[in-house]
Amino acid sequence: MKINIAEIRRMEGSTLHYDLREQFPAVEFDGEQIVFVAPIHVQIAVTNAEKELWARGTIQSEMRVACSRCLEEFRQPLAIPYEDEWIAVGQATEEQAETALLFEKDEIEIQDRVMEQILLSLPMKTLCSADCRGLCPSCGQNLNLGQCQCREDTIDPRLAELAKWNHD
Image (cartoon, rainbow, N blue to C red):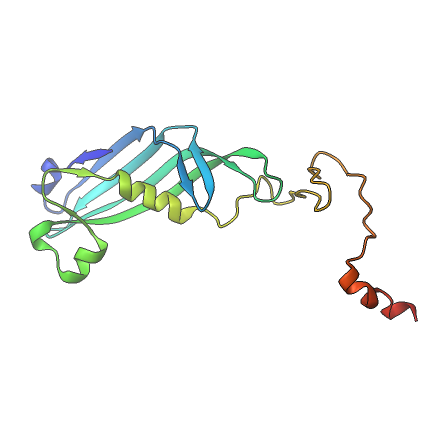
């Protein structure tokens, strides 16, 4: 995913808009497989602020992920902001060199930065819905599809004495 910045580098104070689409491969993150079922759509406005370029826009796509409670796969839309600072290699301060995207030529490869923004935006646990009931801890039945036949009054033997507390 490359952006040609030759034109905007010569236009101080100006802004150019870029509209990019690219299919990203599946990625493994935190033990989960994330599959992009739609191309990554990046819309960016790049502003020339003399010594640096400011990129602001959005990243959109759709992912197929597994629910953390019921383990069913579902499609999750992705719409996140993109913001970045781009600086020519020789003009960056020490601090900027650590955080900004440094470039040498008139083409900037942003695929890694886009993927970084996507991964940072992911929730710790993905849920197919807020009211997902998950799996039965005894038999593994998906409780969203129906109730299982397990007894719910089973008490952990380590806590059996506490169950008698109110009955005396």
